[in-house]
Image (cartoon, rainbow, N blue to C red; front, side, top):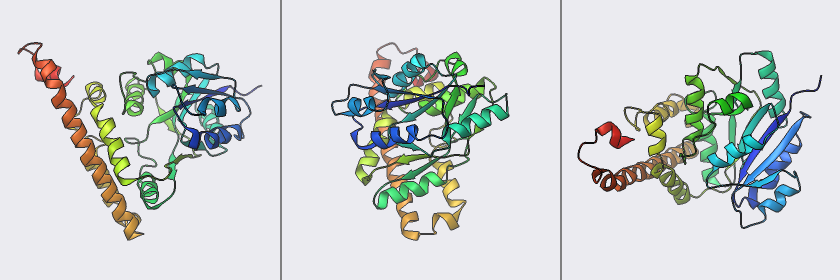
Amino acid sequence: MKPPLVSVIVTTKNNHATLDACLLSISRQDYGNIELLVIDNDSTDDTKEIAGTYTPLVFNKGPERSAQRNFGAEKANGRYVLIIDSDMELSPEVVSSCIQNIQADPQLKVLIIPEESFGEGFWARCKQLERSFYVGMDSIEAARFFDKTVYQAVGGYNESMTGGEDWDLTNRLRAQGLAIGRAQAFIYHNEGRPRFTRTARKMYYYARHAAAYFAQNPTASALTDKSGPLERYKLFFSKPGKLFKNPLVGAGMLLLKTAEYAAGGLGYLQARRSRRPDQSSQGQGQSQGQEAA
């Protein structure tokens, strides 16, 4: 019997630097029945040309990655979909590991694939250390491999979200009572050469768009959320031998994470403040819960 078709969906936007390695890693999978789709978002570099050397299934869709992913799932012919970003590389056994897990347990329809970071320079080493703490953490890692019918039944990614959409989808799948398993093979996340200030600005950007996530995933406080700052610091300090095996890298990771959270907190507060005038103009009768939504 022919093994089930797996559609690997890669979203892109001006990803010249990382795309070739990403697509090459997909072409080198030890699982034979794969369909590759690249969903671009108006790239102005040669992203589409690179993608075209690996697959004829190159499409254009925006405005953000959630819409790109859902569009890719609509175009996919596979029974299963694996959705990754273009700065990721798959170890050769990722797809076969996913299929083995799914076939071993008929109840499984969704899988988390662990990730490991790599890159150049000191801050990349800090990001690598940080990511290593998250392997096996259900509150932080999100699903990437789905039975296509299950993915579509819950509506895929929430297209109103720019940031947090991975967790949101995983939360909705769990709310449906679906078991979420784990693959054994790793995805490698290419951090490139991270810059301290650029990393903080990225967190600021996503935090400014976090309201949609928290509206759908209410929590007492973004600070104390199960994937928020306090829980992550607890996780880091719960393994001091790992955190400070290399004291300089450990201290750098804590400094970088603190800067990210400071920038994120500022972005989130500014976004809430900027929404208030519009909300107040709708009348004084809005409840606090409506305002948060």
